[in-house]
Every structure is written in structure tokens, then in C-alpha cells.
Length: 335
Picture 1 (tube, rainbow, N blue to C red):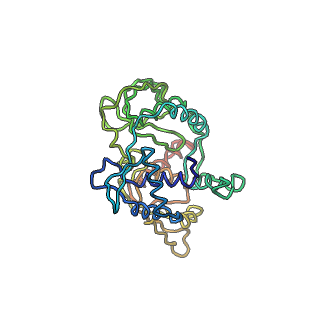
Picture 2 (cartoon, one colour):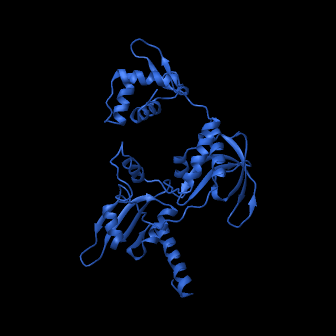
Picture 3 (tube, rainbow, N blue to C red):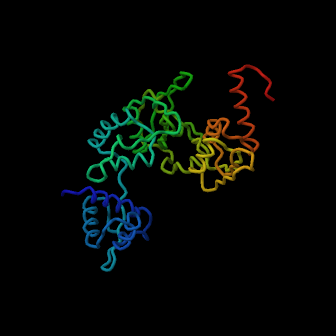
């Protein structure tokens, strides 16, 4: 059966919208509900009941969807949960492509995804890098070098919920061989990290994948790794992008920072009020998560931002500025 690109995407969308069979006997969507959800997801789709019935028939034949409640008026359908184990040939094909992809890995952005689509001559408008460019607003570091075989083993363990024993070299060149229970993969800046539980207990830990020297796949993990969620992990401040402790930040911004924030707010709570006549800049007030990322951003603004509150963050910023000054000009009293 030959499938067009649009139909393949529609089949994937139908499958993703359906509830899974293990969510309880009361769930399941009728073809009418599926059409409504598809229309909400993509208003450009032109759908008929006959088209959806044909799609559902093919998905059932492929073992991706199952009939949930049989009824002459409105039968309902569910998504079939797929086995975690990866088919051998599929895995080999994936590893070959992973080797190539890792050589040029960069941070994902929505614009980058859009450009990928725009470049397609049949599905986009055939615009490429000659006409569209993405430049980061911070210095782009070269990605840490990752052995694709190490990374593929980590991904396999994560997918199949296996424990692993790794050989790991830390920043001090110390080598250890912990047994881990993988929870997730996170890219932060130019590095990729494995989030995992150690076999001896404790909370989640971060392991830079480029520092992993060897991976040994073990049996199925006895930890409840399936309940891990990155949203919760980040909210607890574990990834340095915390949205757990919210602060009200007040600062005077000027120069390029003032202009940038008028056009690109930090978030919806941001308020910018021009200073009184004769004073430069604007008063910035915003409710924002307290994090290392925020501190680094404030320091990167230099003299274009003067932090007023909260006091604790202001003290941290001043201490960092003092240390920087002393590293250049020596021990001068800056108290």
C-alpha cells in the first residue's frame, strides 16, 4: 500500500490522539470524536467519515489501534500500547543515522523546525540557508564529542527500561563504575545528560554522556522509572531551569537590554515603565523563576541592568561582580 506524506502524518496524528487501552474501560473515541479532535489539531485537514474509517481500518490491521466498544451506532477506538523492546533491524538502522546526526547536533528551536519544513520542495516553499539564518543570542559552544555507540546504548536502556553499569570519568578525572537506572535524556546547552537513579538509592543524578566511557546493559530495572516526568524534575529545580521558587524581580534596564525587553518580554507578567524625565532606562518588574540561568543572564547584561530586588539575588550579583573585578584589578576594597 502506497501512502502519501499527508496521509502518513494523518495516521500518526490519529494514533497519538487516541487514549491507550490501559487507561480504563470507559475510554475510547468514536470516529466522530476523532474527526473533531483532528480538526482542532489541524484546521487545514479536509476530513470525511469514510476517510477516517479507512484510516482506522489500516491502523487496526497494523496493530496500532484496536476496536474498544463495538456498537452499530458509534464504535469506539483506542491506541494499542507498543512493546518497549526495539526490533533488531530497526535498531541497527537507527544507530547508523544516530552516528551522522550526533556529528552536528545543536539546540532545537521552533524556528529551526519551521525551516526544515520550508526547505522541502514538495511540502514547503523551497527556502534554504541561503535565505534564512538562525543566530543564537549567546556564544555558541561546540557540542561535546559523544560516542554514538555509547549514546545508542543509553537510549536503548531508556527505551527498554533496563539498568546499566557505566564507566564514568568526572571533571577531576576520577573514574567510577556505578549501576544506574536511566530516567531520561536532557540537552542543556552544548552537552547531553543522562538523568538516572543510582543503584544505592538517593535522588536523581546527572551524568554527562560525553564522560561515559563504557555502557553495559543489564536486566530490567526494578525502579519505577516510568513515573519520571521532566516537567516535575524541572519544577523541583533539578535542571537549573527551575519554575518552583518564583520571585518578583525589579531592575532598571537601559541600552540594548531595554530595547530587547520591550520587543521580547521575559514572560507575560513583565512590566516596563520609562524612568522619570532626566533618568535613563525603564523600570522592569517581572515575576520569574529563580535559577542559575537567570543569574547568568543578569550578569551577561553588564551595565545595562541594575538589579533592585530581591535582596538575596542582588547580593549574589554584587558578589559575582566583586570577584570578577578582583580577578582583573586585584584586592581592592569594594565593600
